[in-house]
Length: 72
View 1 (cartoon, rainbow, N blue to C red):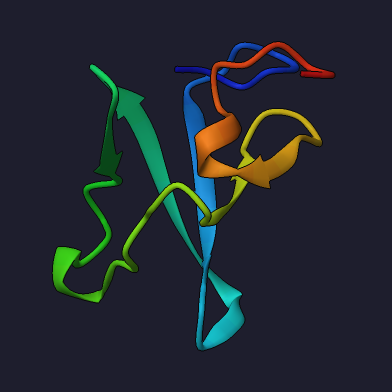
View 2 (cartoon, one colour):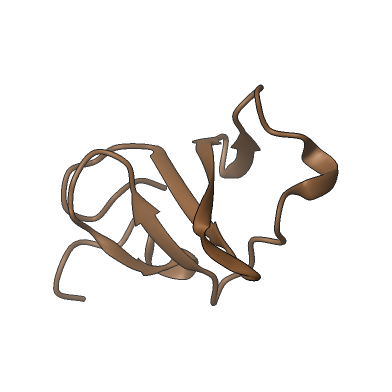
């Protein structure tokens, strides 16, 4: 799984209660691994429909779209 535009495996999601708070994570072995500086008890649930943003380029979409080529 990677960004469909740039191939990065670093992403972030926004806090569902405050869109100005974000949670960065990497995709490792198909799983979400939040940054070490994030309290895991505060991390939002990341599911297939979660709006997800690439930390490297301008891609944004649903979590389930990661790994699909752009335009699919």
